[in-house]
Every structure is written in structure tokens, then in C-alpha cells.
Image 1: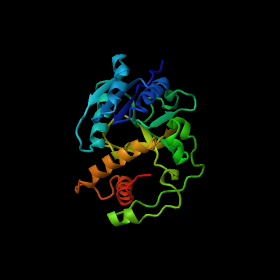
Image 2: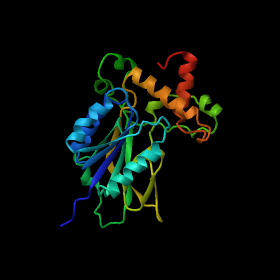
Image 3: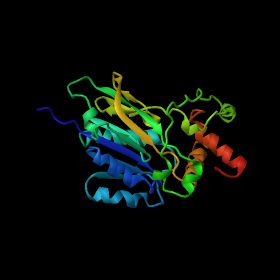
Image 4: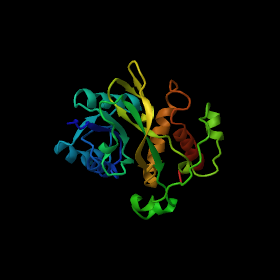
Length: 265
């Protein structure tokens, strides 16, 4: 009989108490075999929301209080731990605001036979949006109920700080297409790239294959949360001249706008 492949989800999280328990419960219900979460110094109850899953044995909780934004390093560490210590054949590198949905309701149904040559399973991602002011009065799950039918493509990545501030969008940033993410085969994986849109493999690069899984993304869930996130990420990348100019350019842009106007809204 064919062995059922083992699917593990990694989660890098900081101050996501409003969504993280729903996220973990959702993916366990979709068939994820185990979750490895790294909490990056949360102060809002995120750790407390994760602890019941850890007590039940469904989740391994790591703590990384560093304020350096080492997303790719921490995500890679979890992915390799999933493979080397927990026997994962496949890994989803997730964020707390993303929900992966298989058409059948079981993520294992999209995984190829393990005897096949490993490939990166490319999953389309959609921003869920709603009227801005709805977030002031109802829960985010009731406010964010729309997505763009034909999302426009984002302009080419800016190359300098001046380019970042010069971009003019015809429609809100969140209505644009968002890059796909992948389900990673673990064989030969040496590093997860920043943003988890791809990986570096030893000696070969697995081919990409379209996958029926959709990812629904809830990027802005409250005014306070968005403001805090923009200030945190924007200021952490602004203060690091060694990063490529464009790292997290949208956060640099939003932070400059918030400072100019005195409000993120």
C-alpha cells in the first residue's frame, strides 16, 4: 500500500492573537499532520493562543524574541526541522493570516505520489478585502468578504527609495494580484526563500506544477493591527542598509505615508 505522505505546516507569527488559533485549527482540520510555530516576541496573547495546541501534541512551539527580521532564516530552520526530526515529505510555510484550501477539504488529496519526481506545488493566493470602515464595526471575518475577480498586476518592483514613493496605483494595493506560494517537497531542500515563494535545493531545482489549492489571505484585520505592523516592519527594514533596497518595499512606502499624514487610515 502507498504510504500517506507526511505534511507539516510551519508558522512564523508575531502579535496575531486575533487569528492564530483559527489558523492552526483550520489547517489541522484540512489534514496537516503537525504544526511548527515560531513566535517572534509576541506581547498580545499569541503564545497563550498556541499553547493548547502544543499541550495536545499537535504543535511544536519555538521562541525567537530577536527584533531582527530574519524571516527566511527562521522559516528555513522550521522546514528543515519538519523534515529531519519529524519526517515531513511536504512542508507548507505559512503566515497567520493565510488559509490554504483544497477543493476536497483535504490537503493530502493534492499531493503527488511520493514515487514521482518531487515538484513545487504552486498555489494561487487571493487577498480578501472589504469596505475599510467595516473593520471598525464588525469582526474581520465578516468585513473581508470580497476578492478581485480580475486582479491587476502590480507594477514592476521599484529599484530605489525614490521609486517606492513615486508609485501611483489606480486601485488599492490589496486589489492587485499577489504572488503565489508553494507547497515544498522536502527532499534536497536547503533553504526557503524570503516570503516562502520558492526554495533553494541541493543539486537540482524541482519543477513547478500548478496545484488546485487556493490560499485566502486576510491582510488587514483592524486599524490598530495594520498600523502596528506597518510601523514594526517598516522601521525594521528601514534601519538595515545591508538589505536589498526593495525588501518589504510596500511597508517602507506605507510607513512614509503614515508619517507624512499622521495616520495610516
